[in-house]
Image (cartoon, rainbow, N blue to C red):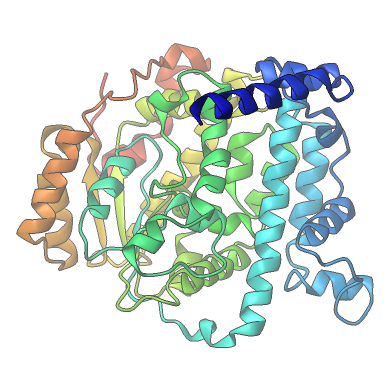
Amino acid sequence: MRGDAIAIRGLTYILAVARRPDPRPEWVTAVNRGDVLPIAEEATPGFTRDGLLREARARLGLTSPGAGGSHDGAIADFGDDRFLEPLDVLVAALEEEAQLTLLGRWITRRFLLRILEGRLQMTAYVRADPGVLDEEIREPLFVAGAPRTGTTILYALLVEDRAHRAPRGWELLRPVPPPDPDPDTFAADARIPLADRELRLPAIVVDGLDAIHVYGGRQPKEDLSAMSFEFRSEEFTTRYNVPSYIDWLARCDMRPAYDTHKLVLQILQRRFTDVQWVLKSPVHMRSFPTLLEVYPDARIAVTHRDPLRILPSLTSLVAALRYAHSDTVDFGEIGRYQSELWNGNLEQLVTLTDDGTLDPARVYHGQYADFLVEPVGAVRALYDHLGMTLTPDAERAMHDYLVAHPQGEHGTHSYSFADIDLDAAEQRAKFARYQERFAVPSEG
């Protein structure tokens, strides 16, 4: 029997080889060799509002004109029309200013369509389950210091406390349907690999990005992605050189972005009970008054570091993300923009602190240097200030995390103030009021 079986398999193999399909196109052979990615057809079409809206609807099977049988009905499938103006500004800037490579266009098209599909799904979900809007977001804790000030490690340690819930990358990218609270089902959600492919792609394109910041579908993620569904987000200004969109974003009303941010959290907690959100993004610093309108009982953790160390590190990160999309990356331009942006944000922080907008009992200020010396001790100080309880189990989990994730585990992030073509003395004077107000030491 074994000989016959081998003979049959051998005959089958011979027959298969004797008759072959027509030759494949060369690009298929090249892809199978791992040489190239056939993306030109998908990447080449221009970015237009109507084209993207039609494609997003078609991807979800919405091929009819929309509710009411009209173009306005199709827009209604996205909830409302507040997102159209920023989308128009963004797509024009992507075409005219961003200087995207072919790969950059392909990545960007998928990015925009995923956002639009998510918006369609959220709108449909709310219509099917309007009770989700009654979900109460209680005392969310926002980690909202400037970038490169220890916010990532603080966030990671807070997540180790099982009393907290932090949105994972896949949840923020694809919040519908609400995740299943069963731990095994949650950990095996089919959206995880989808998000992982998107979030890991820049690190595949740009060597060394992981040494600056690690992105992934399972990782706790900055919640500005929830604001991107409204197209009012610094997620776009970080990835792309889009000056006209940057100007628009600086002037716009951020309330729609925070309303959508809240909706994302309401959807994500719909099947959970007793949720205590911990969230993180430096972008909140520019919008604290709006954040507090939407989340009046929010607690805020602000981390501080010498701005002359922030700027080159942040410039390096932004440059790496932009290099995944464009061959044209200007460190000087990025540094100048970040200097203006963060000078404005930090000056506003001083003002909002001094005028009482930020309740000192609900805002914790911590120094980057403290995290270097004793990170868990710094977290303990935050808990004490905000009236939270740090349990022994949570503290032990934080210690274990630090042991398992030593600084530099993904490589060394090298950067220099000289890279950003700014005058150190001028910058030092520019940020003097901020450093004096919060006793932020200069690092040299």
